[in-house]
Image 1 (cartoon, rainbow, N blue to C red):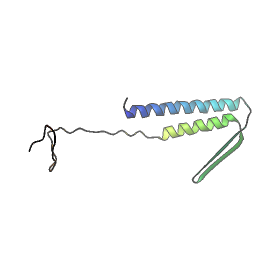
Image 2 (cartoon, one colour):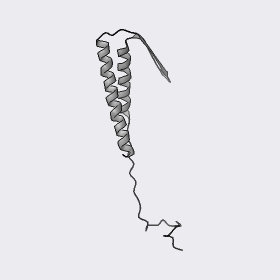
Image 3 (cartoon, one colour):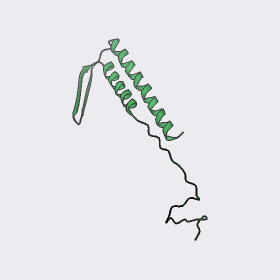
Image 4 (cartoon, rainbow, N blue to C red):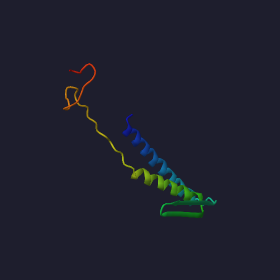
Length: 101
Protein backbone atom coordinates (compact mmCIF):
# COMPACT_ATOMS: atom_id res chain seq x y z
CA UNK A 1 0.00 0.00 0.00
CA UNK A 2 1.28 3.45 -0.79
CA UNK A 3 1.17 6.42 1.58
CA UNK A 4 -2.10 7.80 0.24
CA UNK A 5 -3.93 4.49 0.75
CA UNK A 6 -2.57 4.21 4.30
CA UNK A 7 -3.67 7.77 5.13
CA UNK A 8 -7.11 7.09 3.62
CA UNK A 9 -7.48 3.90 5.69
CA UNK A 10 -6.48 5.79 8.85
CA UNK A 11 -9.06 8.51 8.17
CA UNK A 12 -11.83 5.98 7.51
CA UNK A 13 -10.95 4.12 10.72
CA UNK A 14 -10.94 7.40 12.70
CA UNK A 15 -14.35 8.34 11.31
CA UNK A 16 -15.85 4.94 12.13
CA UNK A 17 -14.36 4.94 15.64
CA UNK A 18 -15.50 8.52 16.26
CA UNK A 19 -19.03 7.79 15.05
CA UNK A 20 -19.19 4.69 17.26
CA UNK A 21 -18.02 6.71 20.27
CA UNK A 22 -20.53 9.45 19.49
CA UNK A 23 -23.45 7.02 19.19
CA UNK A 24 -22.29 5.00 22.21
CA UNK A 25 -22.03 8.16 24.29
CA UNK A 26 -25.52 9.24 23.29
CA UNK A 27 -26.85 5.77 24.12
CA UNK A 28 -25.21 5.85 27.56
CA UNK A 29 -26.67 9.32 28.17
CA UNK A 30 -30.17 8.28 27.12
CA UNK A 31 -30.07 5.22 29.37
CA UNK A 32 -29.33 7.53 32.32
CA UNK A 33 -26.29 5.62 33.48
CA UNK A 34 -25.08 7.65 36.42
CA UNK A 35 -21.60 8.74 37.28
CA UNK A 36 -19.64 11.92 37.22
CA UNK A 37 -16.88 13.03 34.95
CA UNK A 38 -14.71 16.09 34.97
CA UNK A 39 -13.28 17.39 31.73
CA UNK A 40 -10.89 20.34 31.62
CA UNK A 41 -9.18 21.53 28.45
CA UNK A 42 -7.17 24.70 28.14
CA UNK A 43 -5.39 25.82 25.04
CA UNK A 44 -4.25 29.07 23.49
CA UNK A 45 -7.30 31.29 23.47
CA UNK A 46 -9.76 28.51 24.40
CA UNK A 47 -10.85 26.84 27.58
CA UNK A 48 -13.44 24.12 28.14
CA UNK A 49 -14.63 23.00 31.55
CA UNK A 50 -17.25 20.32 31.94
CA UNK A 51 -18.00 19.14 35.46
CA UNK A 52 -20.54 16.71 36.87
CA UNK A 53 -21.38 15.38 33.42
CA UNK A 54 -22.45 11.83 32.74
CA UNK A 55 -19.78 9.66 31.13
CA UNK A 56 -21.92 9.38 28.02
CA UNK A 57 -21.65 13.10 27.34
CA UNK A 58 -17.87 12.99 27.65
CA UNK A 59 -17.64 9.95 25.35
CA UNK A 60 -19.94 11.63 22.82
CA UNK A 61 -17.86 14.83 22.85
CA UNK A 62 -14.63 12.90 22.32
CA UNK A 63 -16.24 10.99 19.44
CA UNK A 64 -17.51 14.23 17.91
CA UNK A 65 -14.02 15.77 18.12
CA UNK A 66 -12.50 12.68 16.51
CA UNK A 67 -14.96 12.78 13.61
CA UNK A 68 -14.44 16.51 13.14
CA UNK A 69 -10.64 16.21 13.08
CA UNK A 70 -10.70 13.28 10.66
CA UNK A 71 -13.07 15.07 8.28
CA UNK A 72 -10.99 18.25 8.41
CA UNK A 73 -7.76 16.45 7.39
CA UNK A 74 -6.59 16.74 3.81
CA UNK A 75 -4.77 14.02 1.90
CA UNK A 76 -2.00 15.36 -0.33
CA UNK A 77 -0.98 13.28 -3.29
CA UNK A 78 2.32 14.05 -4.95
CA UNK A 79 2.88 13.23 -8.59
CA UNK A 80 6.46 12.50 -9.57
CA UNK A 81 7.81 12.09 -13.04
CA UNK A 82 10.94 10.26 -14.02
CA UNK A 83 12.98 11.86 -16.77
CA UNK A 84 14.60 9.63 -19.34
CA UNK A 85 18.36 9.14 -18.82
CA UNK A 86 19.11 10.55 -22.29
CA UNK A 87 17.99 14.06 -21.33
CA UNK A 88 20.70 16.30 -19.93
CA UNK A 89 20.66 19.61 -18.21
CA UNK A 90 23.20 22.13 -19.53
CA UNK A 91 26.29 22.10 -17.32
CA UNK A 92 25.38 18.75 -15.75
CA UNK A 93 28.15 16.21 -15.27
CA UNK A 94 27.21 12.55 -15.51
CA UNK A 95 28.96 9.81 -13.62
CA UNK A 96 28.80 6.07 -13.91
CA UNK A 97 28.56 3.90 -17.00
CA UNK A 98 26.58 6.48 -19.00
CA UNK A 99 29.15 9.25 -18.55
CA UNK A 100 30.80 10.58 -21.66
CA UNK A 101 33.87 12.78 -21.59
